[in-house]
Length: 90
Image 1: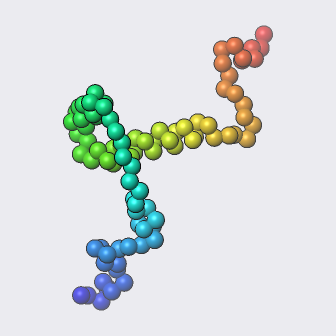
Image 2: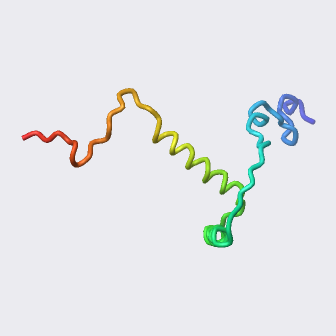
Image 3: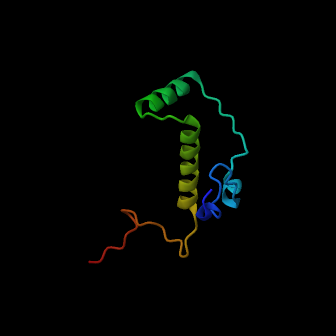
């Protein structure tokens, strides 16, 4: 081993805090009916999804984070103007 390799982490055993904190230890079981499973398989084949677990995890988390973002309170809680609530200057 060369002298400059002494301080480099071993690529096989890099068990840092971040990796340990992000390790997935919780199992989730999902039941699908035949039509849902067929649709998932067609989607995965059509769009070349290689890892269904990763695809489902990312899809679920995107939906959750989007809902959190949509429902997050803002400082002034203004409603978005609609066609009937806009102030029109004449």
